Length: 122
Image 1 (cartoon, one colour):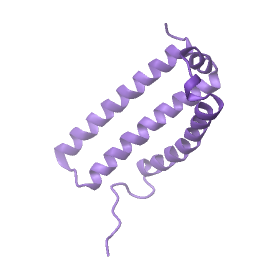
Image 2 (tube, helix red, strand yellow):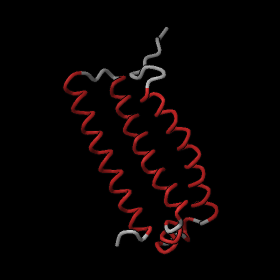
Image 3 (spheres, helix red, strand yellow):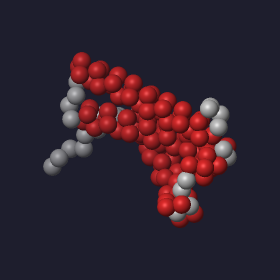
Image 4 (spheres, rainbow, N blue to C red):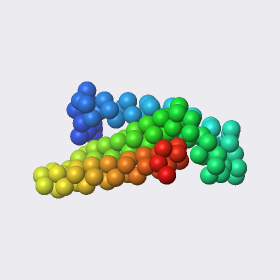
């Protein structure tokens, strides 16, 4: 019988964060989907409406946390999958830092866009 293998020890911080971010993402994704597919029909979404939603602090913070959480969850998941495939040594270190830089750049760009949409940056 096949053994279960995970690159993360059960109960470790990366293991815990992957599960916490997954739970958060399920809730916020449901909110996001409901709001942008039922409350505001996709065909009626416009730049001005997005700016108006992003100018509300609760929405702005929720969407910014959504972005950062999704970025972490995705990068951490890709890293875990690669470790599960046997990535070790120098390749492991290189991949880790490429993913960290990519994740930071993605989160920074998304946060910049959120700040522009909020009107905090011109």
